[in-house]
Length: 195
Length: 212
Image (cartoon, each protein chain N blue to C red):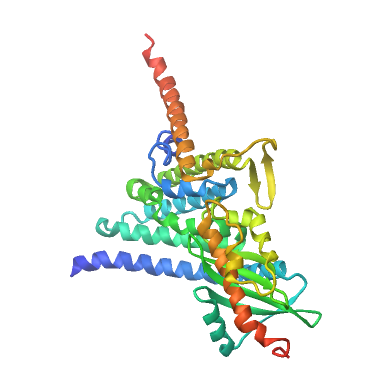
């Protein structure tokens, strides 16, 4: 018993001190991190639909339909975009599977459902390799060629980057899912849905 | 003080964690595709290694040897999490690229290895010297490796949103250098280089003794 205590107490003390230190660091950095995340999100929303103001869609009824349409990709947030009070389109934040885990991709759509832009908010892809989906700018720039009513086959028809097929597919699957979400859910909401 | 410098220098030269001891290679080869990432990885390793060495050394008499490994891991993991949170808060652009490798510093054998092999048996001052020396030795190698791979693999050196240096436009970069085989190749030449330098130093030290 005495021997067990001799071993347990140092481990316990170490863990308590470590937890306290981490809690303190977390408290200090948390507002900073939340702010950085918010800025990053704002930047990518502005990149896909410039000059718009975004309101996050909060409706559990629609969320169910959206999730069903997007499967297997997860839709994190759907934003309604407005320019000068006029309905200007949608921005959808999805989490799609890349090579190194989930990739969070933001896709902008105009009122007709054509893609206005795609940005990658966060990812775990291999630096220098999977990250080519960001650094080889032509890859993301080909998505705005997708016209209203685009289908999964249209998205598959776009080029992937050789050597980074899985990362490319992560982005393409995300865009294809948003295409389905628009056709099945968002297009039906129309302008009247947002008063 | 001379002992302090001897320990400090060992990490840079004859006991360099990467080119001589060859520990902690996985994260090294993976991160060294960009100079910028390698530099921040180096800073993170120097910080975690020195702090964990000092802390382990301070409490070395209180840590029972039967449970030393779990305690080392908790200490190291805490410092790594601190680095992780701080980087996320203050240099998000680096964090977005380096993100997955930071938590892996926990299992980087350099750090656990030094806690176990050095800090647990030596005084605080020497452990700090060992941590700094090993950390700087690690950083120097990973930064050089990344410089070579990025410059010749992409044709330029990137620093955040700007380009620090680029090769003439006619240069067609072989992407092999960015992939793992390229990492191994370049690293192998660096080991040769490190051996050669270390042997030259050894030879110079022994030379006077050989003369009659």
